[in-house]
Amino acid sequence: MPEEPEQSLIQESGDFDSNNSVSESSLELANRLIVRLKPEDNSSIFGMIANKSYYSGGLMTIILVFWWLAVDSASDDLDSGLSTFFDLDFSQVALAVIGLGLMSSLLSDLSRELGKLLPSLISGAMLIMCGLYVIEPMAIGLLTDQYELMDGVWRCLRLGILWAGVSWCAHLLVDASLLVWLKRFCDSNGIEVTPDNDSTKSEGKPSDA
Image 1 (cartoon, rainbow, N blue to C red):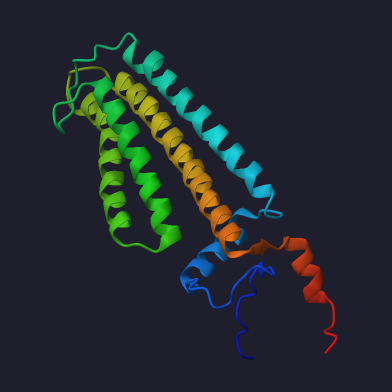
Image 2 (image 1 turned 180 degrees about the vertical axis):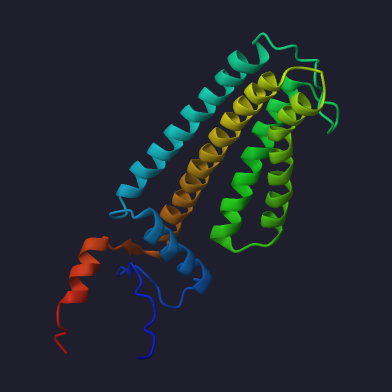
């Protein structure tokens, strides 16, 4: 059987001008976002933006508090086990992991949605640096006498928590930003989001033609 084109989950309202120069790539991006994020209708996008922004901001605050209490104000000798990469102490390494992890996840998610090459390349380089910073304390504890192996494992664990947290925070932030774009795109072009359950029901009904 010939492959059928993917059914769009967006509908053109009466205000939509077919002569407008709305690019096919923008319509495809809007449809992909609707399929992945599953907004019920146009008005529900407001709530999704608010929720994702709310959780992203809260998570970033928790991450910074965790860095302050578990890294910067902890009992570690921050000057022991300086990183091989740029001679950063443990607190500075944690900040580097936060920054690199956040930017890497932002660029990776944007590259996936927008199909851009350069952000993905930069994200990959940042990802490698993050991984090196996270596992380096365990290697120092195992191969040197600057501190015990368990101290290195404890440092790795804290860095891993920070990395995972900022990665999830970036994912929420990208989703919120894309939803803002989707809302503006639909409003400016008179496009109505079709609820998924309605489209499914309509597919099951026989055509009147």
